[in-house]
Image 1 (tube, rainbow, N blue to C red):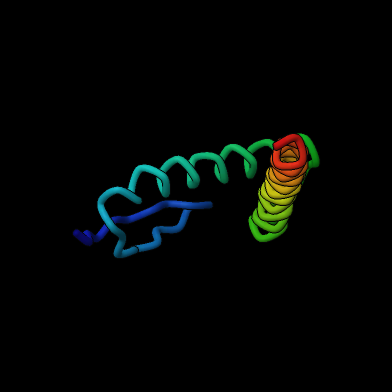
Image 2: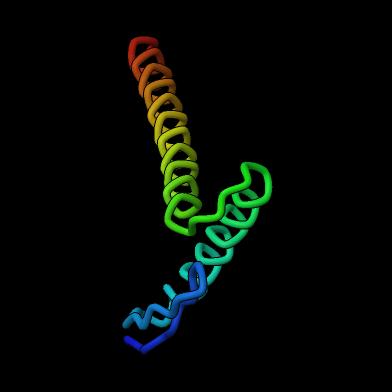
Length: 89
């Protein structure tokens, strides 16, 4: 079932319609973005929210890419093991 939620990021509200099971994930993601914004503003003396948001987006995209690469590596290792097992049979 869909519901309306407001997600606040960088001082702005974003009204969204999401499935009820997605709300928690969105709120967690928004909190993570906020933490990155605060970290980048503090550590790199960034005063423009857009710059902090861009850096947060880059950080999150980098994390996602690393996860996807690791998953692909694990899948390849599993396939190799399956092939070895098949060869033994």
